[in-house]
Length: 201
Image 1: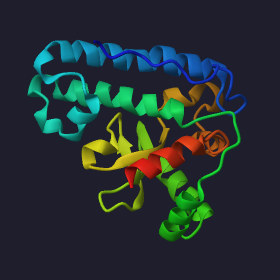
Image 2 (image 1 turned 180 degrees about the horizontal axis):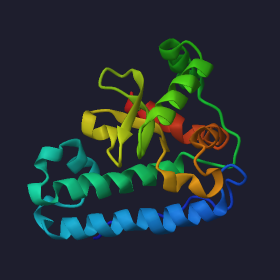
Image 3 (image 1 turned 60 degrees about the horizontal axis):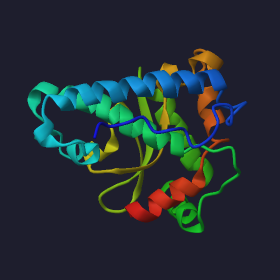
């Protein structure tokens, strides 16, 4: 069973005007599909390790050296994007009372969390991601990862993340990444974030 590209959970234009339809087609149909194709090609070389990307990327040293970086890059790209699509919605949602309280306790307020997350997303040099994660102690952290690295390789459970590769925003926002980051806060699927938080902590 090869890894397959998941369908978007909404129409390509559902997140307009915040995330444009053209970007969603390019991002999902082209970029994500490429990660899927490349990780399948890598895994075919070592069928004995299976296709459980979460398990493999939790222990990257277990991945054979000749395909390790390909699996980190492309397997991470697949996992990150499969989660990313689910973290957005056109519906109006809110953090759960439990998550809101944890955000306040950790960051001081939701606005302070938003500032910390925006800073992580803005200052990630080059390509990468900004994340809200649950760490191994069950606490919240804002972290940033380069390229398609995933927080699970550092023992952290991502519950909220933003792709800040230029392919995620350049069609609409050109080089103004902060405008894209601001727009993302209008399409967050807090129901999914709440679910991930409840499972991770």
